[in-house]
Image 1 (tube, one colour):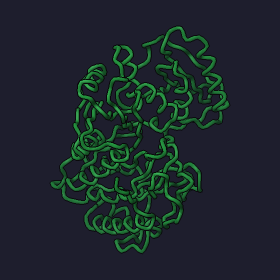
Image 2 (cartoon, one colour; image 1 turned 90 degrees about the vertical axis):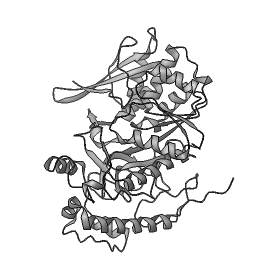
Image 3 (cartoon, helix red, strand yellow; image 1 turned 180 degrees about the vertical axis):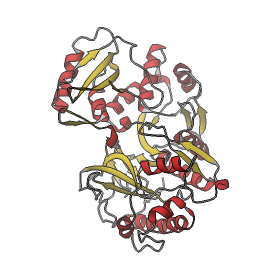
Image 4 (cartoon, one colour; image 1 turned 60 degrees about the horizontal axis):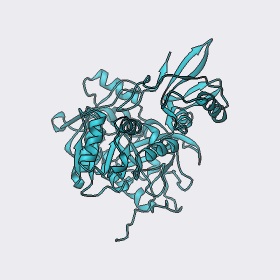
Length: 437
């Protein structure tokens, strides 16, 4: 096999600055949203450095984009070219606020397809692989990008829209599928249905389960649950957003570590409260600039995603001489993938709780088939209760063991209520397990 050489930090930074200059030249000439936003900032296309960009460029937040589209419906003013140039329209899921419509030209679409190919390369997908896309195709961008990128690589692409879970499982066996794209929740659900319908997943050819849409792909307990249920398969996590495109891919050498595609994005990790660069080893908010999505760009976009840079990464704008990742890459590495979202955190009796941390505790127990978290305010205090659906009705002592696990993890007493098997809802896309009462 020929040796693979990855860009150095110096080469990455040089490419980012070159792309950023071209991006700013285009935006200042034709993008009304950023013409208004950057007025008076002193920002110009002849940037001296990435540091100058960070110092001068204001953050972009989702609320601004929502307000812009409401004021100038239906697409807002964050369009660099005339509307006739745009050929794709997608929208966000609306799980954290009002949905956004996002337009792309063929050129920006091509940029995102190239980024999605990097996800596949890291997961070991090669021409001739056979991929099942286990979701119904809708307006969300990831479905379409994943499909078209796989087709360009030379994979056999099998859309799973409109099929039941059982039909999808039979298709996996009939078509000798080698990779499945789905959410972590749905990978678990497919394994559950396989048991119900007596389908032996050990007979499948699946070697890769590529997941996104939820933080679970980088949570050890969830990864373990999926890989145990799918013998011979490895979980590969990644993440992206409609408004920015595919952002990360899983490190081939370190499970649960995501690399940011710094050839395509300028990434920062900031302290959400101070808006300054997060200190080394601290959890912070991921901020992204889309370097190649010129037609509908975002500058210093506060994603709301909480991450922690791996110790070997210096996330300051200046290139560093630190050692590369064991996989050979120099791109920003995020330990544990996405740790949660700022707007998902709740405070229960003074303890910060994130959904991914709760799921990590619950998924350690193989006896749990599904769960639901109830959050309510009682006497001005936020309380949390958990409903657990056991895999079998006779699971004795499960509630007590779970309560102890929560106490050990969070120093909180969390009431656990067992419900009969088959009671709680199942999910094909993003799971909605947290309910406010």
